[in-house]
Length: 223
Image (cartoon, rainbow, N blue to C red; front, side, top):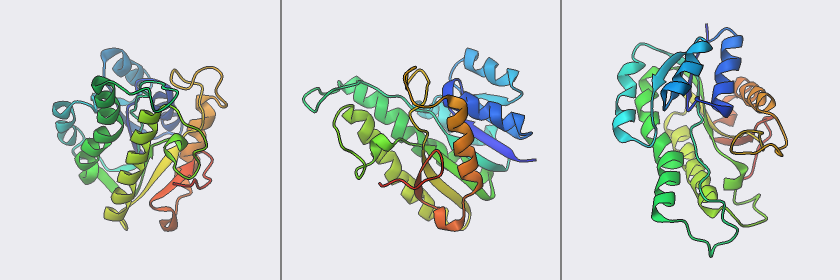
């Protein structure tokens, strides 16, 4: 039986990832910050763990909670958008900067060392990024803090892929513009399509894909 870990699964993409993995017959461990999110995970048959990636003390207890697991698939989904600024003159507050960078960058950097001993051989590990973090694909400005956080996350993914080469396949995934609370109702695709595509892309990874930045349909994206 495939064993799956989803970090940041209280709603949206993370919750759908859990739903699809459970429907496929996988054993699933998933995290949420509050009791409402944890209850949604339990109702899907997942092992639900309380975790806030922006809280160092919360993350520090993850390793012992997953002791004994061997995860074949890991998705680190937790993230926030922050202020939707129109141009570089609109600066984030220090609190906004801290929230976005702590959640989107430092959060995964805290989580990954906690799960290394629980990775199965040739595990497939995805960090949920965004094409908004791409330098090569950028053609407009706006929401600079979110863009910077995802560019930084992509940089961390490259380091992770190099350190775990031969042991795990690590990629950054762009989920598409998805109809979630963050993406809005006008987005291009529904959450079911996004997650199904990302899970299929993970299943097709080879050693040559380690350290890649991929669209939800598996197409390579420019950094």
